Length: 135
Image 1: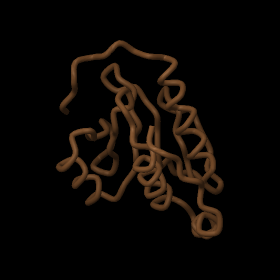
Image 2: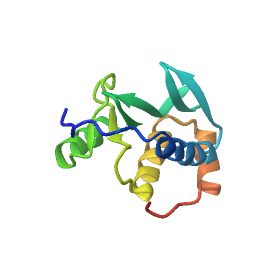
Image 3: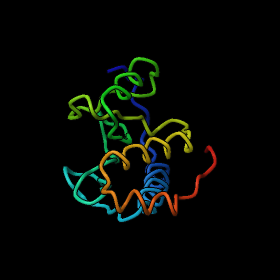
Image 4: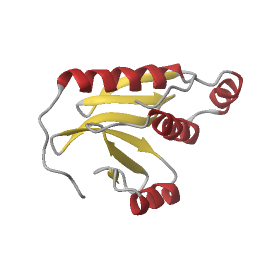
């Protein structure tokens, strides 16, 4: 897993990233936040679609994606790395560098769609969460 040298942790920045992640995830129909395995997890029903976690001393966002899409991302974009527990279905993004929030929101939505119940998907179609700008 390629990593850059460890950076000095920035707790204020990490709190802002988690707050923005939380705001988007919890705007999805019936999404909830749980705390499992020592970090925040976001679920649709009983299934997790995203997590914010520390990996190798750095903050990261983990996304559950279809296996083929996860594999393609890992091959084509070095910002992403295999989530340690992912079994090929999860990819993670380092969260201590500039983030492309529209891209992150698209990945979160894909992950949500992959685990959400039909009624949740119908609600999502009626009321999609607002998109934000890069930053």
